[in-house]
Length: 69
Image 1 (cartoon, rainbow, N blue to C red):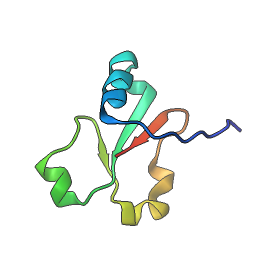
Image 2: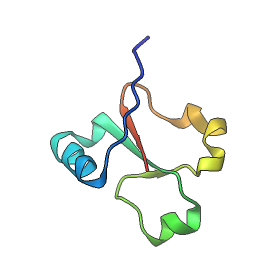
Image 3: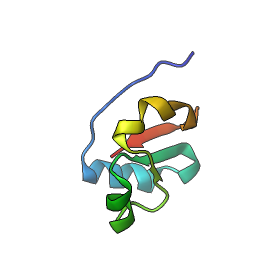
């Protein structure tokens, strides 16, 4: 099993990460509520409200970096 690593990044670091990686290498996950997601979100992000996260972990892709915001 691959080692899991968690790091905090800021908005500038995320922009740089997205610039230097292909979209199939990562999954953006917006943990806000549907209303907030509908108002604005990063293109390609999946909505997974924080309160539902533990019950829906199986929906997250394996073998890709997962970026929660």
